[in-house]
Image (cartoon, helix red, strand yellow):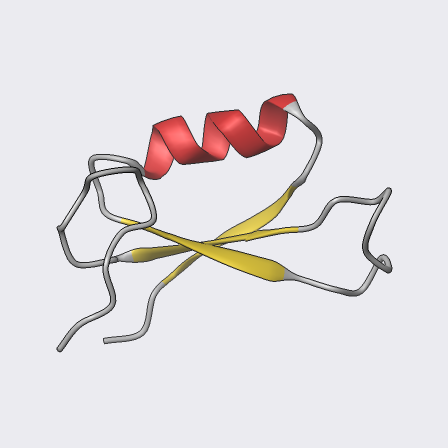
Length: 62
């Protein structure tokens, strides 16, 4: 079974990893991961970036 996109209601396989942290809660080197399909990569990235949480976006290994 493949990993599923983190967008609400999405059941598509993940193709991206959005690495983020909340500097008020996490140490600078900590990375949490949201998974994204191609359709939700931009919207999830924008959501995290608007809060200054997004650190990196990398391909999700198959």
